[in-house]
Amino acid sequence: MFEEKPQSLQQRVTDLAAEALQSGQPATWFEPLYQQAQGDTGQVPWAKLEPHPYLQEWLEVEAIQGKGQSVLVIGCGLGDDAELLAKLGFKVTAFDVAPTAIAWCQQRFPNSSVDYQVADLFKLPQSWQQRFDLVVEIRDIQALPLSVRTDVIKAVASPVAVAGTLFIVTRIRDHGTIPDGPPWPLSDQELAQLHELGLKEHDRVQFTVSEQPEVRQVRLVYQRITA
Image 1 (cartoon, rainbow, N blue to C red):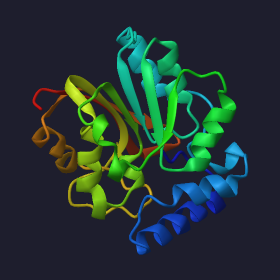
Image 2: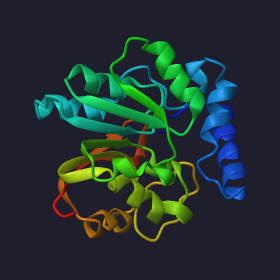
Image 3: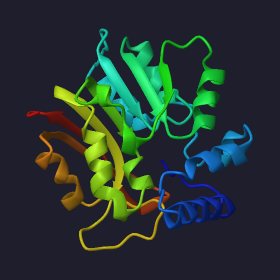
């Protein structure tokens, strides 16, 4: 999440996130943002109406086909990543904490095979634990503050099946620096928690954007080696 948008939109995101954090429910700012957008994708910072390019590249380079394997898309937004995976033959479950986002997905893709659901990352169904062959997480961890980072990383790792894959796209930061988010980039020390949870880093690619050379983004692929 969080591509560059006009300052007024960025300020609205910052204000909504701060209010949610003060309320003790840091994930609740997404729904009002989608509601306030009133169907205008230009008011949703991460809405590109196409699959994320880092996900597309990985799927193409690795020549990945779903073949009926199960995939969970975390924080699916407006559904473009989920739809791409469905076209490749995956059995896709995609969720978002914002009911308006899920309704928007269902409106955009009325004949979709994707199982779109409203769900809270902090309260995932027990039936999802270590169930999915592939879990896709694109800029959701960084959208939540450092105070809940440990819980968020645990939640993201929990649906990955043994021998399954976790795909992550995120901004990263140096250890010891305190980000002024949102977004709140991850450090390698935070990512190391995934190893403690039974996942091993399999691949890492770093990207920079010419308009923002100071922003470091990575595509990470993990595999679960232990339950």
